[in-house]
Length: 254
Ligand SMILES: Nc1nc2c(ncn2[C@@H]2O[C@H](COP(=O)(O)OP(=O)(O)OP(=O)(O)O)[C@@H](O)[C@H]2O)c(=O)[nH]1
Ligand SMILES: [Mg+2]
Image (cartoon, rainbow, N blue to C red; front, side):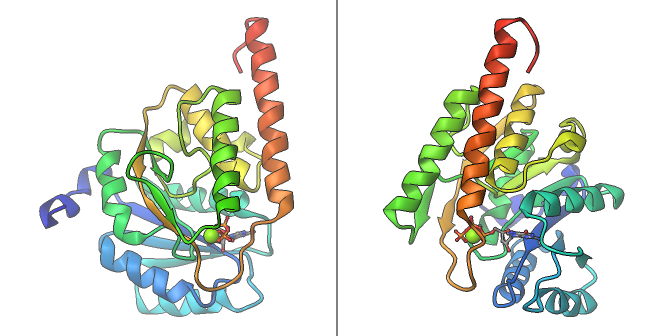
């Protein structure tokens, strides 16, 4: 991609990259630096759930030195979904036209963000995808890949969403898309938050595009992935899928 392409995101409106954090002290500085280098015009919002390891304080230092870095301090750990909803609201209140989801641990490479933003020029929602041609994961055990691919396939078939990587969390939304998703009703916390938003986007007729990404397993800090998050996702997707099929059978909209 040439420089001209990289610098022409203006028509999309101001870009906000939301980075939710819980105990990411080792990762926060490198990820903020990489985002700033990759898309210099983008702003960053760190949504920190009062991390005991001081991530919030480090984010404040970054914000103090750079007016394009902002911090949303939340009271305590409430899950990724809640942090994103608060971040989206903050971004819309501050007139951003594009809201990006990105993990703090380096799994979502900021260097790939220009490609997501370029794709957003012709879409309402862009999903970074590990499971389309060109997409891949680096340093994942086979068991993790099996879980992720299986979760996506299960959700795709049950919910009837034509998306290969429906649990991924590297995404770019136009603000109008978020406004049209009925976010007040989103209650999911973990991976199913991502499935929930993608499914809502498809149901509401938005144009959703997947672009291939290289997902790199975290090198520093601890995972917040837990059995509960996986169980919540499986359970909710099953309830949604069965409910929507039953609704269709009696002619109701899901
Ligand atoms: N604010 C906030 N951020 C969270 C919470 N849980 C996870 N995160 C952040 O969400 C992002 C994704 O969490 P990860 O622990 O990397 O989850 P994962 O990518 O599924 O797991 P790994 O592959 O092991 O890294 C990271 O930036 C976390 O710091 C939470 O409860 N609140
Ligand atoms: Mg991670």
